[in-house]
Length: 466
Image (cartoon, rainbow, N blue to C red):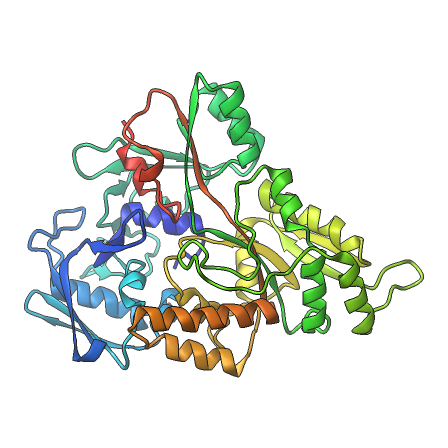
């Protein structure tokens, strides 16, 4: 059920699926040792490892894995991940293999399967274990990954301030995660020695400060990453539903100066979600031009009033400093062209619940873990649950439907380039920048270097620290 980045990253340590993504976002075996594709891409066979076990030592059989996948597909409550599998029609166990049946070929099936991870919920009052169903009070959770929860009961699923994970094999150290929203608190904990690693959680400006001032105590590891910061617009809003208004807002946001201010080392190609994966991708570049933005708003019927204000909008954000600071800068930039912005600051849990219900006018957030172009289908296809902008474009729907069944990589990439170009013109979302994955690590810890970091900011490489 976890859709937020932190939940997905922690899940990846505790649970394993048929396959997993390596640090370069390529599918590699996990519970399945191999796979084959048949019937023109409509049937996938996954052979289960003979020694596949969960964290209690129970075998993970083809039958159990099939039951797990079917609960993801149509269990109650329905997992939100099912939105990534529009062609999946059924699952079958055959000897030591799991067969996935599709209504049409799905080139993104393999990568998306890494999200569907095996676990059991055990309850002494229940006659049988629940496989891959939402745990309830009184359950003990048994995972299948590299680490197990130190508190495996239901309450352990909702850590307040920290989480302890214990390794299930010899070699890795226990990992204790401390949750902190405030940037200064994170820095103080590092300096006091309370923590050893700040994983992709401190702004580049402060990371560089640590490197310069405390280079004898800390080292910085960095790698190009695929996380994308973006602005989302609610297209059902009477003002933001007008493309010219969204375009004017985009023209008024000086992204390059924000990058310079934050001392980021980022790519600010407008309209691009997949630049690290499609370096030749084309997108409509939106320059910083507030004068043009003003003319566009005048022409659209939103002149300045006597007080200089054209209209009011609300940007939803959280107290987390990076996002809050970015939205405060946007607030000042939009004021220059006569748009008065109110920042609605809510806690992260409320924020994510609101945007899932489309209860927003504008918000900024970040896509984590992008590994392929299926993100476009999830966020742009009409009627999809992750289409939070309420975007509808028949031509984009047609291109996405073709791309979701196109098995030729080059042809599919070309379709996604066309989608990306249309998105950059329609602007249901405005991609702002791609960020590097940056870790600040106490000196003395070894086993991890920059190239070992994951493109998606996965926590798995931390298991290599010694």
